Amino acid sequence: MGLSRRRILVAAAAVPVLFAVDRGIRAAGDGIRAAAASVRPPAVGTSASRCAMCGAPDHSMLNPGCPAARMLG
Image 1: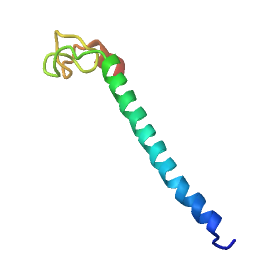
Image 2: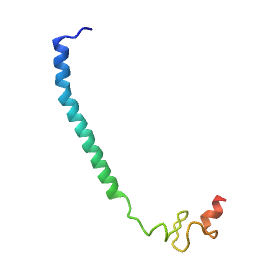
Image 3: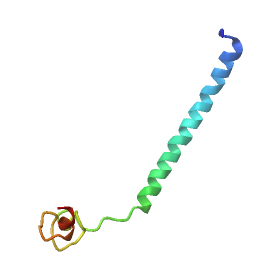
Image 4: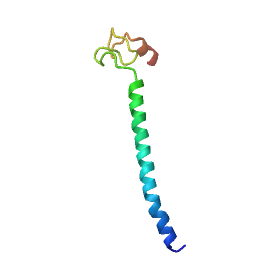
């Protein structure tokens, strides 16, 4: 398995192909991220105005009257 002219030429020809494949993979990743952001539902309220356990707007997460708190503990 010596180094031959043919192997050097194949390696030199493969470099631009690898760069093109890398660019395509990065573009696909950017497209997937953009699609995920457009599909994700918008936020409703803030963590101060909604319960993180059940999503109800009438109490906070630390409220012992939360129905989800009863299920967990």
